[in-house]
Image (cartoon, rainbow, N blue to C red; front, side):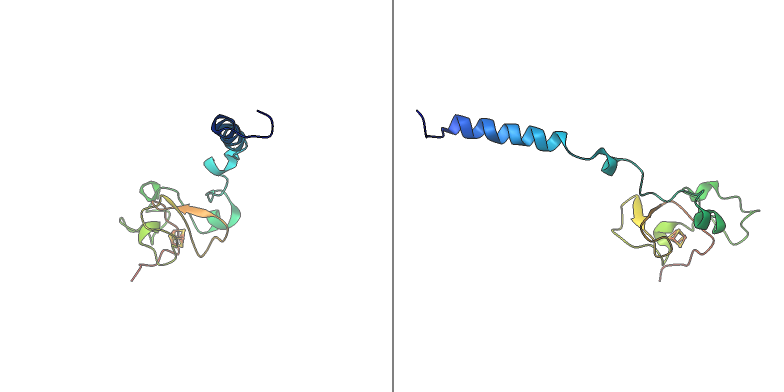
Length: 107
Ligand code: SF4
């Protein structure tokens, strides 16, 4: 049976390639490396919080309950996603439940 490729051989090769491909998937995509950290200089300067519920209204006088990244004019990306791009922080994702000092109501 030399020179032929049976269905069984093709299936074995397909499964082997699939196993290799899955094994080589970068784990980095599943982590939070692209999430904006509140401690990054610009984020800290703008009072970015990952969860707006933790904003101290005494420290951030412009904050009003209900203001969230998800209803800010600057938020981009797909509605419903928990982490999305923001015009102010290129290359990073902000929490849809977050907030910062330059929140502007989405029209
Ligand atoms: Fe969130 Fe808007 Fe501030 Fe961006 S500009 S971090 S979307 S509140």
